[in-house]
Image 1 (spheres, rainbow, N blue to C red):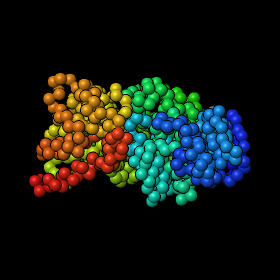
Image 2 (image 1 turned 60 degrees about the vertical axis):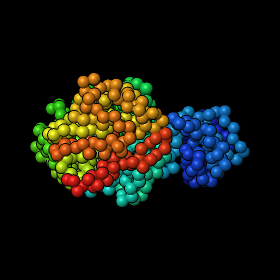
Image 3 (image 1 turned 120 degrees about the vertical axis):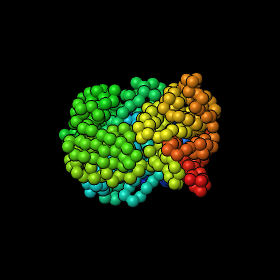
Length: 495
């Protein structure tokens, strides 16, 4: 593709020396620039791409796209000044890869909780309906048989377009994508032609380190329905909304204004997709919807909502309930989401990604519903993230668990003991006697496992599928599941 074809119709405020040369690639990371490529300078949260323009030119960039009008480039290098570099990146990325999303069915899932599980369930339903499907999510990116470890819940726009293009080339017709509030705010999904957007829920104390306040966080989520899912005369578009969420009416109003078809789900009988009855036990869940019985190995109220969201979405694509039911019945465990670790021990060990106060509360209530002798909870809070949720998590943990092992999560650049102090501050004094402070996460996990008795549940929360521990911005290999499994195997002769 030639340069002029690539930037055609782009909103360029100022340009100079744009030669109509062949483009070999598009990059926002100067370290990856190749000769003949375009470098888009993005101002990120940790670094400003404009500081690396000269590095990109040195590696052979033929065009620089930036918001900086005053930038001076050497002769032979084109300049395109735009109002928003991220939006420009998204637009030219879609054009470079031939707008693959316009030739596929794309479902986006947003919300504080449930994005990953709903996306996985949705993909399984598509596959059961014989649609070749891909996935872009928190755990991994799936392109047919190719699995790519995830770097972000929602990658940068150029990476999204590259993934979708590879899916399309591989014969995939459908894709499910987790859509984070960061991605919505930064415009990473600009130029993705979604067919449906799912809203799972929204919590007040989440991502405030980035969004600063709940209003900004809410508005970022609403952008999905108002800005990124415009109604089209060429194809039907859907908004699938959790009617039980306190903010559902705001999302419904936004979706209506955007001209979208709306489907609602929830426990409320006012929801279009609501269970007539439901039951959980150690083997999973059972519920009835529209006269059809559903069973699933997934368990807990959260997964009931995730299944309802996926059912509502699949029905919008005219997939029959029989097919949906079969897919949900045969779904395997979702990594790090109520994932069991077993080595023959007389107690239950479960690892879960719950890292917000609401998610932790839902997890512990689900476990309590299953009648454990005791709940032994291991958890911490991430560093360089919203501090306001730490005492809330401490309060919930001490209220709902029998023994609480407060430890490190991903401390990043913060002192782990300071984070633990924030958590501990939310625990009322008469419940503090059930708490154990063990900053080393491995030691906390092994202590909880050593303390467990027959019939107990050891719940290890916060990291789920993650295979690392971030300390001083260094990624150290660490997997809660492996740590637990290793200890249980060593203790196996005692069980």
